[in-house]
Each structure stands twice: as C-alpha cells, then as structure tokens.
Image (cartoon, rainbow, N blue to C red; front, side, top):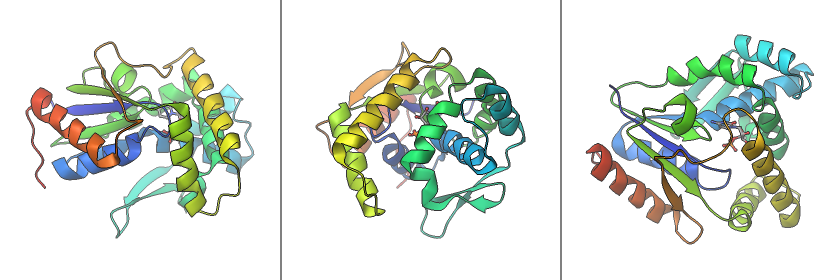
Length: 228
Ligand code: C5P
C-alpha cells in the first residue's frame, strides 16, 4: 500500500508550507486539498453560481476541469477550465466561497475520487481538513496541525500584505473565526482531529521547527527518512 501522511488543521496553521516542504524532503507527492475546494469556489464565482446552492455546485464539481501544474520555481499553478487562477486562488473572497461550496455533501462526494487519485508511489503528503478522517482513513500517519486564531490571523495578514491586501488584522481574524466555525460545524467532514491523529500546536514554533517535528514523526511512525 502506498503510504499517506495526512496533515489536517485550520487555515493559517501552516499545513500548506509544512506539507509542501515535507513532501519535497521525502521526494513524495503533495496534495493541497484546500486548493481543490478553492478551485471549485473560484469556478462557482466565475460561472455566477451561488456557492450555497448544493445542486448547482455539485454539478459543477462533477465536470470541473482541474489541473495542477508545477511551475519552474517549484510552485504549483492551478488551472480551472484551462484558466490559471493565479493569486486569486489565495484571496479571502475565494477562501470564503471555498468554505461554502465545501459544506455540500454532494460536492465533497464528487471530489473524493479526484483526491484519492493523488495517492502515487513512493508516497503522498495530503493536507486539508478531512484527509485523515475521510479521504485517507488508512493514512500511515495523521497529524492535526493547529495554532491559536490570533497567531493564524497574524500569519495570514503578513502573507496577504505581500500580495497588496488592503484589509485589517481584526477583519482577517473575524473572517478566520467565521470560516473555522463553518468548517467545524458542518454536518459532513467537519474540521476535527482524527481519533488517532498526533496534535501539533505550531503557535510558538517556527516553520523549520514544525517541518523537523513532522519529519521526525514520519521517521518514527512510517520508517521513512528524508532523501534531501
Ligand atoms: O486550506 P484552505 O484554507 O486552502 O481551504 C479552503 C477551504 O476549503 C476551507 O475553509 C475548507 O472549507 C475547505 N476545505 C475542506 N476540506 C479540505 C480542504 C479544504 O472542506 N480537505
């Protein structure tokens, strides 16, 4: 069985940066499942579909032409119906649409096999909300990466500032709390740690420290060491 390491947690916990770096170090594949939901949210906004309309969103999810293309700098470009989403994929507007479309069971079901198809040799690092609970319940290692809402908002604020974001920190904190609330309370695949997950709080850790802790867990639990 191809090993999967699931890294779940709320937005701003650092899952993306940690997952991507750990995958690089191990020479494994990387699935950013948040980008899959963001792409669906982006496509709904583009098509003028109400993100709260389950039937229309589920239809869109079934037919979504989604491509992940590695660019020359090692980053990942996301193409939705051949259109490069660019930085729009990371905007708060698309994040909010993603969180709404992600609340529909039929849309989640339509995206399940797409995510499972990312399980390729020699291994997969999968990051999201339900990687360890729903998509890869047989993951060799499950990590729930978290941090306080204040620390996560401050991180997002720094990130967004670099892309010319004009909002304020309190506004961002409120948006993050609203999104956490919606993600945690939804009936299907809510944001919660799998019973067998290792909970890692990154509030007082640097990115490098979290990466090293995850690699140590991969070594002790999965028996795999970094190739670089
Ligand atoms: O992780 P990221 O912030 O990119 O995710 C955007 C949104 O997609 C989340 O707020 C969540 O609602 C949804 N999502 C999800 N399940 C996942 C990954 C993301 O519902 N596995």
